[in-house]
View 1 (cartoon, one colour):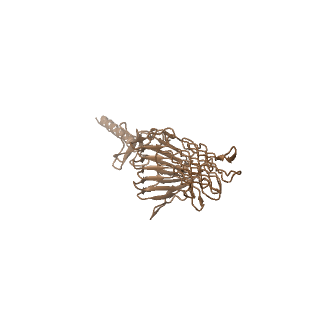
View 2 (view 1 turned 90 degrees about the horizontal axis):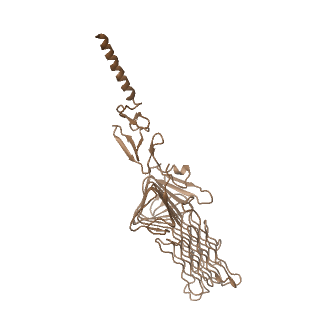
Length: 483
């Protein structure tokens, strides 16, 4: 009897020791159990302390961990769960155009951006200024791009909201890249448009400023518009001081319209400035802004409008443009010609710029516009005019309509219309003694999400796009990359 009792005791201790091996915090048991305070990681079949960095594993598109009591904590992964790395983690958005250092800013901080009043964001410094305060981003970097494309001002927040009634105006030399780990929501207005060329009655000439990363309009000191598809400046006909040709419109997603000829170039006159060519890429990689319009011929010619800026919004979660929301990157109108000593031609309109949205989900129930500005009218030898300055072209619209060119009087030529919606090309300036400026071409829109789709509503409007409620023909729809 004693011999059998001894054997029973030995077997009992052997069984306990085996259980201790797989409940010791190293190896899970056959039912995936661990000692209290530990969790089983299915991919490795190892027990790890609850809530530790190793306590992370994928279950479909969720990341599972445990609290101190051993209860499961599940996190939804908007872009899917990455089970190929140890420990497992949620995928992160891989934003276009950014280098590794700039990408690392995404989901790296806790600062929220909530705007309830009008503000201006300067891409030179990253500062956001309202009438009574200044917001300095905790995560800000300036990154160069190759091939002459503008540098990128990268600002990262945990989430971004522009409330209804608030307008965030973006200015500065760098294109804007706005990163958020959470939602980017626009209920108000995000405006990166170029400004109109200005001509005052006393002859003061101010070229239109480009939006962030966009090209400046031409003027008397530098007649050609700046940017990848800048419009060429008009010229003064040497054979007749009264004949000046219009400046060409800036080009980007669509070509700019040519400036109107001065008089008859075959006899005595001058051909209008060439409209800017199509530039950039459909996917907006690299990220270019729009192009400025050329100045009208003669030193008193109307300056060109500025090209629309470049806006890139990237959220690891979602981008929502509500039915009251507006995202704008349109070109400025060209200025009309001035009476001056011999009268002069109109300036070209700036092209639309670029809007790039990247997020797990994208919802556009409001408007995204990147339209070209209208060309300015020529001033025709002071015949029939009631002002010393001819009519300027309209700025790129915030709907699908083409921006009107400046209306002509006397011997001045009318300005061309700006490109928009499904008509991407800027209109040509009218031929006359002093030609009108060409209209700016439309810009570009690109939208990328996890499933390659976007949600829309009854008030959705995209321009340029072949259909205002869909992203096609002037608007590129695709899938995001993840990392």
